[in-house]
Length: 81
Image (cartoon, rainbow, N blue to C red):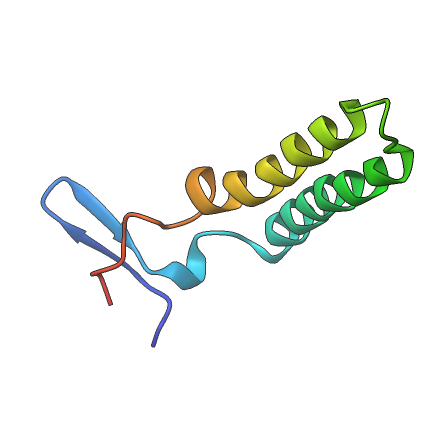
């Protein structure tokens, strides 16, 4: 599969290989991993009397999962290849 850009009319189609550079992918990975590890770290403050660490864990984990799947991902391109 080659990395190329094709133009059909006014629409520009890019192949998945050239959407993100290596540096962008590494930065995105580090940010999402920091969100995920922050979610795990927040559980160390969890007690029965304090529910806020669990709320922070759920929010951080949801962001770490949702951002790559919806905003950064190609979730709308299932039938392209």
